[in-house]
Amino acid sequence: MNASIIKQLIESGLPDSDVVVEGDDGTHFNAYIVSESFIGKNLLEQHKMVYKALGDKIGKEIHALSFKTFTPHEFKNNKLN
Image 1 (cartoon, rainbow, N blue to C red):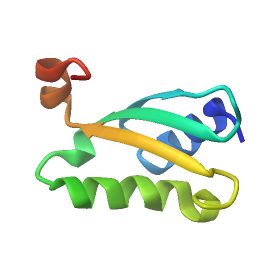
Image 2 (spheres, rainbow, N blue to C red):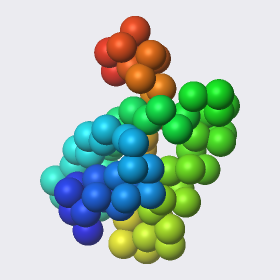
Image 3 (tube, rainbow, N blue to C red):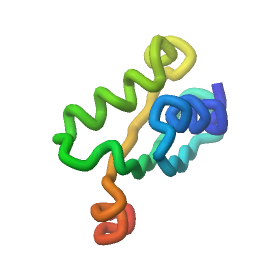
Image 4 (cartoon, one colour):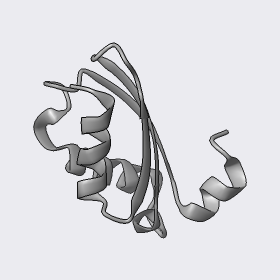
């Protein structure tokens, strides 16, 4: 598994998202996901949406993924903080 495939999976499952995935060891990844689909959703709901986009890859091909989710407004105001 690599970062670009994870990015593609998330963007396919959340078509309105902007995704950055970091990680070059093939095992551990960090992602930042900005999506209008997150508006009105709590953090747990947002994370469930990301896990759904990744399907059964979590725990198998993707061994460790840490991610933060943002609405466009949150992202603009927080700048990944």
